[in-house]
Length: 108
Image (tube, rainbow, N blue to C red; front, side, top):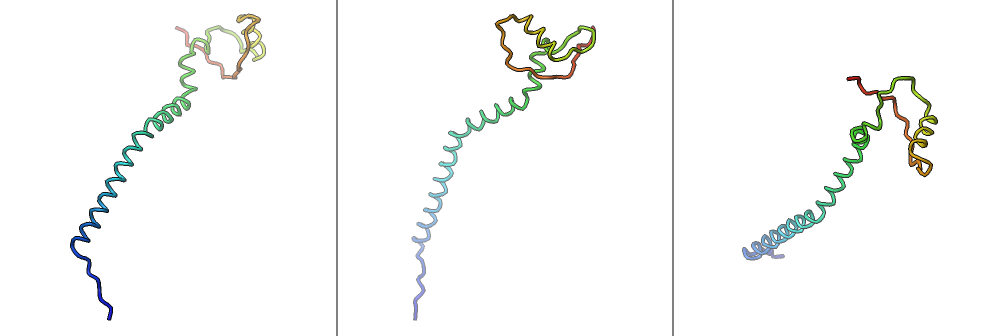
């Protein structure tokens, strides 16, 4: 006949205490890692949001440069680039040319 081994009360208590100690360790470790990683996640989220909002920010920041109140027909992009180079001088270098729809300022 085989005997059943019945765990004693002290063995059960020790097992429960070990499980609680392990859970406390995991909670503390999770909290500490969160404090370390949290700022990186915040910066990534903030810069991602700014990247998504770039077109709206450019339109707001450069409203004076992107709009005109000059009447007349729209000019080809090549003529616009030539005029910009004449205005900026011969040492100016073009970094980028973006085609945008015509934006006219409302007349006051």
